[in-house]
Length: 452
Image 1 (tube, rainbow, N blue to C red):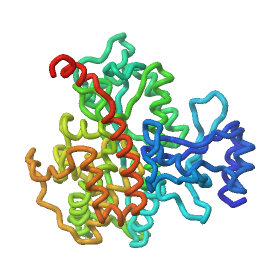
Image 2: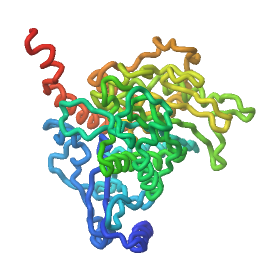
Image 3: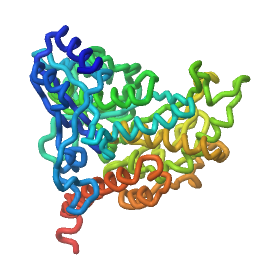
Image 4: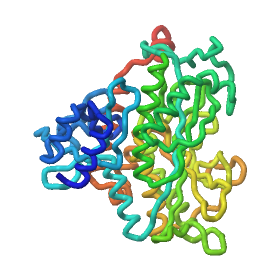
């Protein structure tokens, strides 16, 4: 048994854990895995006995798979070994019995990793940064809606009824009393996050009815991606315990703003972690400009990693304050790429394009890959955007099918994420899109039934 395995065993026994959830994110960021009694989990660590079928990573959100012949499908439906990462071991605080969860890597028989494992896609990209002595630091901000329980998908979503006995009406951006309506939920959420060592920071009410934003403290990219992955599950579980739902759909309600996952990012250099985005005199560095240039050049081709669903484009194209552009500006939230006011050591870029419906590993990977390419290729950005004039930077694809075509055609996407990943991810998302197109919607019944 390795030192890592022994550390896991000691942690579990010290806390008298009864069951262990060994989980992996699929391409959509959905948690999948196994729940095992503690003794059986420990027993299986040494011999690599914890396994899952390879195809579990390429499930579509409808529960199907890409069509026969897809490169993402293992026709033998063989297994990969689950190799738990000790750094991700935490309690699962909402169960009555002591339960732990741990995120695992997906190791193939030859010792390699599945090309469709999103956590490994991000880890591989971070290795390229490390080879140059660069250390990315990120801070996600993630928005979601609290909504009334909805068991009929044909019915629109509604904000839940709060402590006052009333449903939220109107826009309550940064409203303190609007948050207080659901204090018991937020108390439990913060307690659950603390027990899982999730580094959440501030909480505020966003502009939509029942919409909330939680900010994370800055940290290492892989650790923060792990935390967002666990956090989304935690929010949904906490909401259900309080009698309503939480949704991370990008645009869950037609008349309300969309939900985003903004990614603040900066890069530091060397063992002393010198800020790469600032020169010694505090001025913006060439690396900072090149990073911006890479975001502007390559994020349009990486759009499916930031907007992976049909619903994602409803937010981008039709949401309030929609950031449908790759312009950049100083403290300008109309620009898709915002440079917040900050001292030179904390100079950073905020990517405002991703929706909260994304797989956090892939969204963070897309953002960092574009910046990395900009720095290594010495790309220059445009002048900063002033005011609301962003039309010349509205270069993102307008729909999911076009986005996938551009993603598959991008040489930089293949170089950054791997040929098999690009092809397999596109197969899965395209299968979901085709399933969506087969559905006859209520809009069609309403306007076409007796008119055409």
